Structure formats: structure tokens, C-alpha cells
Length: 245
Ligand SMILES: [Mn+2]
Image (cartoon, rainbow, N blue to C red; front, side, top):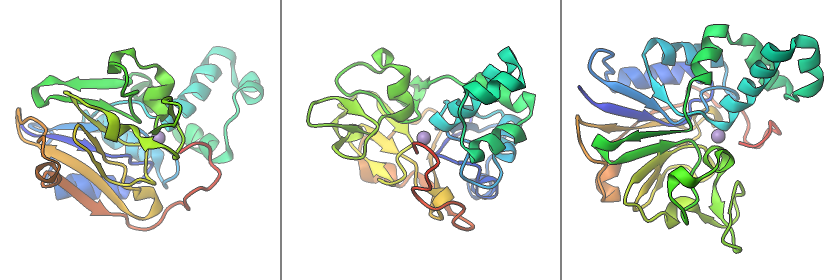
């Protein structure tokens, strides 16, 4: 087995995804590719991102935007198009994403778990976060898909106000996550946030670990394992009213 390459939120940025795979000289025969979720929405070509991921045999966790289009697909499959129009509310942009995805691509997204454990690296991957007051396996789906902060009341929430959950997580497992583009790169004692806002014109960031290498405990050492590529352009304005980020 070769390296493990964990990639932050791609959000439909297929060109940058391809740029990153070249930048790290990804080898499908020896490397393992792991995505932190939110493959789709916001960027220009969600279907291409899912297709690249599928073709590369990428492992991934499900993100809240992936879940959004999946809920539409599951409902449509169960009830037919007409009733789906009435019952599942999707923004126009998410609707366009959902209509661009093939059955095979939906099947790929639908099979993604909410968390991935990579014990050889001492690593757990989730899309958004965990409640630092409990074990990750005790966290509910909403937390794993949307968490950002712990508020004054001690409760985990999707809000930006409060303390980032990653700062409060005491390990020992290292958690790599995405979802929080506004806070950008997060390098905490036991957590690494990789959503560096590629779709907003910033970067697509990855953490590259050698075969069997533990995630470095020292954040500076961990920073040396990061590889990133710049966005080709700002594909989407921040806070574009497209639902929760
Ligand atoms: Mn997200």
C-alpha cells in the first residue's frame, strides 16, 4: 500500500480536483484517496467530481450537500418525479446538480458512510465534526454532517459563533474534517480542518500520509504534510443563499 491522501471539500471543482491529483502524483495502483465529503454543489461540475472519485476508487464520507441531493434522489426513486417536486425542497442550484448526476453516481454517493476509520494512521474522517463531549460513534447524523461550534450552553451546533469543536476535541484519535470554509485551514491538537474554500476561489487542500504513518501530533509537523492547489477561479460567492454551507 502507498500513501493515503485526504482531500478537503471539492464542491464541484473538477478542474482543481484534477490539478490536485496531478500535484501529488496520485497513483491509483498504490495510493488511497479519501475525501471529506461535499463532493457536489457550488462549483461548476459536480457530476465530473463524482465521476473522478468513482473512477479513482476514492473512499469518502458523505457531506451535507451530498446528503441534500441524495434525499431528493431517494424520494424520487420511491415516489416518482411528480410527488418529489412537491415534497423535497431543493434550491434551483441543488436541483441542477441532482439532475446532472447519473444513477451510477448517485449510487456511489448513497454508499458513502458518515465516518471512516483509518486505524493505521490513528485517524478518523468525518465531514463536519463531532461533539467533543462524547465518543464519535455516539454522535448523531446531524452533528457529523453539520457541526461547527460549541456554544456557551455547551451544545454542539452548526453555527459559526462559539468555540470551534476541533479546538475542544481531546483525542486521542486524530480527526480530519471539512465543512467549515469560513474558518479555513484548522490545525488543532487532535483535529485538522481541510476546507480551504476552493469553490470560493481559495485552495483545494489535502493531507498526504505515508504508508502506515500516524497523523503527526505536532500541528507544525502536520502542516508539512499538506499539499494544495489554487482555485482556477471563484466559482461561487460566499453566503450565496444556497442553504447551510
Ligand atoms: Mn459541508
